[in-house]
Image (cartoon, each protein chain N blue to C red):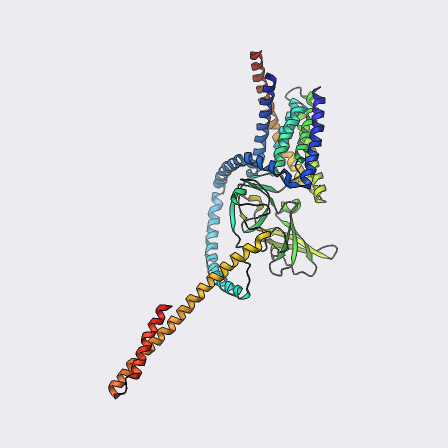
Length: 179
Length: 353
């Protein structure tokens, strides 16, 4: 019974966090004129959680993030859920690399996920529009976004890691008390 | 164990998503309720954050730009003087135009569509899709396919409506194609958005006929050919018009009137293209018939009054002259009576006008 409660609480926290990332990305970042390209905050949250807690958590976050994106855009419903879900799943496969607070592996994951995400979107556009200026898009959309996302990852990953460790500790203490 | 469980979930999610994608691709409106219910939750939050955010950002910008504002103010004052003068001239021309329009029986009054003001509450800062969300929805009478303008120029079209929000796809989006025409020659073209030209603040104009008159600097407005865009809305000005490599069509670029980098408040035109025929004639009739009629009757009244006034004056003078003559020469008073009659009827005419 306690486990189920904990699970629900956890899922609620994931949802609120993803929602916060979504609101930051859609309501706050457009106001910051110094971002030439906006960092993909939802992707950061998804792959970070996948990496820290494993595939299942990554997928849950991915489904939430994708759902919000799908609701926001008027593209075929489910496309973003699929992209983010896969991103969370694959990041979770590298959970065993999480040994210390090193930022190197998350950054590698960030690059891989960004490339995967943008390739998927580009593929969809190619399918939907029949044309895509691939070289131009890579230079002017993908690379700037990648740069800013990497920049934010350095900051956001640490914050996510530490908040979650604290949450885990609180849960552990409570668990012991109950036991 | 955990990993295998994840894989199963992944497969389920994949199948479900592919199914949903196909479903919404074939019949988009099936998913609309989901979007709508999510909108109930999200819109108030987004609305709050973006109004708070824009207040803060606005204050920061305010301080930064104060100096520029002084210079700009000076320039704008001069501009106002110039525009006031121009406005006076144009106003008189508008009256003339309305009279001429009435003569021509033109019902359509472009750009007199009813509008609703709305605020941008969310916009994805990624570049792939140029989509933003407004704080007006079904409860404000917004419907799908309504046109959105800003700074006097076309911005986009409503693609999705919820109770209290609507989503707008701007014309700079890759997926956007607008039938347009040159305001001067009436020759048609297509205005497309594209990522590459948007970075330069431009749109693309394509499909201009080889013998069409399309010059750089021509105002480009939405065409009547379009099924969703109302005719006569200014999009921007043509530039760099060149002949295509196949020598069959011409294409070029368009400098939009709306500032897409800085959209905060927009106007939604609540007339739909599909029922614009009905609404237009109503608006046109009221405007074209009422005002000139008033003007005409007023002017006619004044003219008649003046005429009758001069008649009365003339009558009075004649009466005086006659009475003088009669007293001196002892002639009959019939003519004097007749003159007095005209004197009476003169003012009566004036009062009835």
